[in-house]
Image (tube, rainbow, N blue to C red; front, side):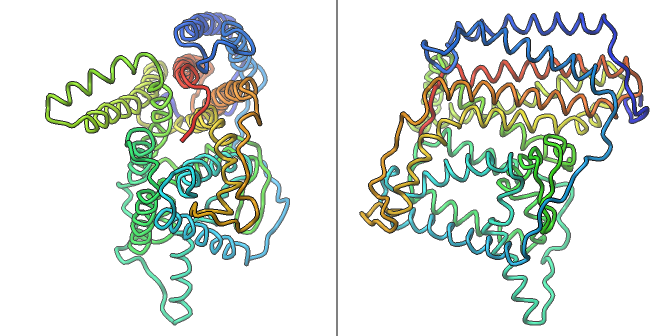
Length: 484
């Protein structure tokens, strides 16, 4: 296979390549204003700068990134430099686990016993804002934050510790985790949570969220007992898989009790590609894309037709709504998978490599894109609705308590201007795609024997990145702020 690892050095691209690259980027820039004029970026007319100016600025940034990578980075980093900067006591992880269990218990109890008004109950805000948005954003900067606080993992590890104290060595009930299953359970979890958030009409029901959380905890504990705590957590727990993937982008990494500083982004290349790993990333990017698309004019025209067709098949009005949302969600997940595979297919054809091998080698380039999509779409939710934690911690059940004296805290919707949110969203989109380009270039240095092979392959990766950039415009085209 001509796409295998070979020479450690790749020479600078020839002028004809830069010409083709410039033409491709310029053509892509023409698509940006088209999207902007059709929908209006972030759904507002009072943008801080004209949409066409952003389009060309983004085009220039991506062009400069491509050229700079080829001119300045011609040696692969076979080992990621790192430095140990701190060590923590061994008792810190059990304490973090106990805190995670306590928080989980409070959230579940609030959902079951508290007010069923979602704005007055801790459960919806904690699940959709702190858990789903806050943890991955923090993980992208400080490393794997979720792992020590994971309440299901902490309970399972506590049970294993108790067995050892009793003189019995814990062992998986069903043996080794089946390799062919891989991360498919995690992919199903991510898709199911996205369906709950984006499609199900009763997503804000605190009691429903509490019941689902308890059922998920039982499922996780059963899986850990069957196949081992760490093996199950790293493969089948969708949230742990998601958060740990995002954590590979961080400049910090926890290794045992040591805190390590490393280069950002490059940790993503250490992700073990198992069956279902691609499905996890496609579910993350596709679900966020559908969320933005579902707020646009096109979906407003398409969805009623699907609901009407579902009604003819015997579905109720609510059922028709769910059918339309489910089909839309599945379409976008499939579209993301098809776009990535198109780029990989092009690379394989250009260099004569094996499609499956290249798909696995470059899969980690989707991680920064997934994070950029998530950050751009949900940052307003975190900034605005996240403030509700100020009063919810004092009154988690919504029954009028004031445990910490903050129950009168008010959400300040003017805390950050719409212009500032817009700038953050644009920066997130650009950073995510630039991160994908960096990882693609770094992997290309070790995956292709010749300069010509790498250049031809990167042409196709450019197509993929431009395609994902166009998808990102859907996220910003119809919605300025996101609320529960």
